[in-house]
Image (cartoon, rainbow, N blue to C red):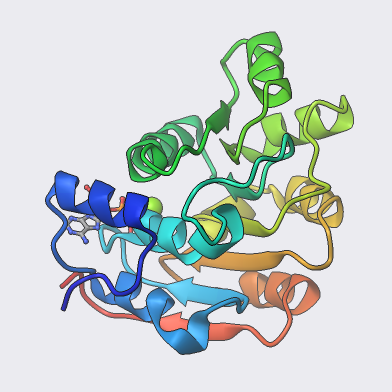
Length: 212
Ligand code: ADP
Ligand code: MG
C-alpha cells in the first residue's frame, strides 16, 4: 500500500525521505472514516505515530491547493511530555511540511522564552511544545489559539502520569470548540478516557498492534 490522496508537498516529502508505505497506524488515520473526526489512537512505541498525526491534520493546516493558509495564528498544536520528545516531533514535522510551506514553532522548557515569543509572533503554522511552556506563552498572550483547527496530545498517557492535567486543560480550554482533538499514546489508561470524554465528540478509536 502507498500513502493515499495526500497533498503534493507532503507526498513529495515522504518519497524523498524514503517512506514508501504507511505504517498501520498511519494507514488507519488516513482512512476516509477518520477524516475530520476526533481520534483516540493507541499504538506501540516506534509505530510511526508522529507522521500519523502529521498526516491526520493536513486538511486542517493546508488549503485546497496544498499550501498553508495565510494566517498569523497557528492552525495546529502538538503537545508532548518532554523537551526531547517535543524537539523530535518538531524535527519530523519540519521535513514533512517544508515543501508545503508550513512554519513550525517549538516551545519547550530550557529554551529562551523571548526567542520563542518572537517566532510565535512572526507567524507559525504548527506549534509544538511541552505543557508548561505552552501554558506560559498562553498566559502571557504570546500564543494565539483562536484559529486552531487541530490539537494533538502526543504521549497523552505519559503527560497525565507526569501530572500535566491542569496545564493540558488550561490549553485545551483556550482553543475553539470547532477544533479536532487527537489523542495519541502507547497505552489507553482510564485517565485518558476522562480527557476524551471532556474534550472530544464522537471520537473514532484506533488501536493497532505491531509496527509493520
Ligand atoms: P512513535 O511515535 O509511534 O513511537 P515515531 O513517530 O517516533 O514512532 O516513528 C518511529 C520511527 O519510524 C521514526 O524513525 C520514523 O521516522 C520512522 N517512520 C515513521 N513512519 C514511517 C514510514 N511510513 N516508513 C518508514 N519509516 C517510518
Ligand atoms: Mg511518538
